[in-house]
Image 1 (cartoon, helix red, strand yellow):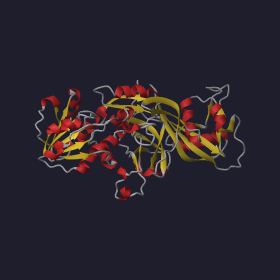
Image 2 (cartoon, helix red, strand yellow):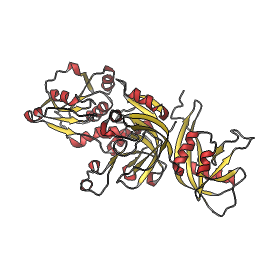
Image 3 (cartoon, helix red, strand yellow):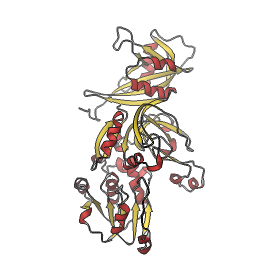
Image 4 (tube, one colour):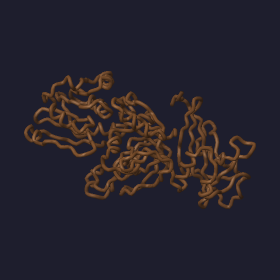
Length: 457
C-alpha cells in the first residue's frame, strides 16, 4: 500500500552543523531507541514551524548550542503504509564560535570520522557525505554501453561553460526514448543519463523549492548565444546527454538560469513531463498551422501522445497513426482522431507529417504520407547511421524541419492550467536501486512512461 500524495506528511528538520571542517554529531545512549547509532541534531517540526526553524530549535534543545540555518542541503520523503515522513537537512553555523562544548554525547567530528560512525540509514549518510565533500551518491551510470547501478558515484559539478551551477536534489525522473537510445550507443554518452526530472534546488534564488531545468547549458558568450541560439551553442553541455551528468542520481548540477520553479498546482510526477512537453510545444514555435491543414502524427508512444495533445489545440485537422490500439484509444478518449497506420493508405494527402516513431524507418514512412510541397517535422533521434534517398525532397519540393528541445514556460503553464493530460501516460514507478529493472520495463513494447522515484530510495 502506498500512502496518497495528498496525505499531510510528518515533517522532520535535521541540522548539519559545520564548524572549521567538523560536523556536530551525537551517539544514541543504551537507554535510547537505536542505541549506539549516530545522529545529527533534529526532530519533528511543530505545527506551522518550518523545517529550518525546527533544526535550529532541536539543536539548541539537544546540544545547548545556538545555530543559524543557512542552506537547504537535501530533502527526501520516506513513504510508509501508515505515514509519509518528509525530511529536510539544513546546513547550519554556530552563532558564537566561542560557545562552550556541546552537551554530553555530542561531538564535532571530522569527515573521516563521520564515515566510520554507524548511522541508521546508510543512504542518508551517503547523501550527507556528498554535501560534506565526500561526494558519494546513488546513480545509474552508463559506460561503454553498459548501464549499472552504483551507490558510491562521485557527485561533482560538470566541466561546462555554463556558470552559476546549482546543486539540485532529484525527487523524480522519467525514462524517455533518448535514454534508451543512449544505452544503444547514441551520442557515445558516458556518465549519468536522465534529463526529465523534478528536484529541489539547494542554493540560489529557488533554494528549497521544487524546480525543473532546461537541459542545454550554453556558454553565453559565443555568436550563437548572442543570437539567442543557446540551445545550439557549440560549446554547450546537455544534461544527461552530452558531457553532463544527468538526473538518474541523487543530485545533479544545473545552471540557475536554466531552472524554473514548479507551481503548486503541478505535482512532482507531472513536473517530470515538462521537458518532453516543451519539446512538443517547440513545433508550435516553428510552424504556424492553418485551419485547412491536415496534420498526421506518426507514432502513438510517449512523445507522439504529447505532440498530438499540443497540436490538437492548434488550427488544423490532426490524426495520429499508430500500431497499438490501446495507445490510440487513450488519445481517442481525449477527442483526438486516431487510426491504425496499416488502415491509412500512403497517398500523400497531408500538408504536415510529424515523425514521432522513434524508429529509423519513420522518415521513410513520412515520405509516403506527405503531399508535394508539404513539410515533414522530424522528432525522432536514433543511434547509428541511417541511409535515406534525398531525391524525393527535391522532386516533390518538400520541407524537412528538425525539431528538438523547447522552451519550458508554455509547458509549465499548460500543466498548471490542466490543458495537457500526462498522468495517464505513467506506466510504473521504480526506486533508483531498481533502475535497471525500470529500463527493462521502459524497453517493453507498448509501455509508456516509466518513472524513477529517487527521493524515496
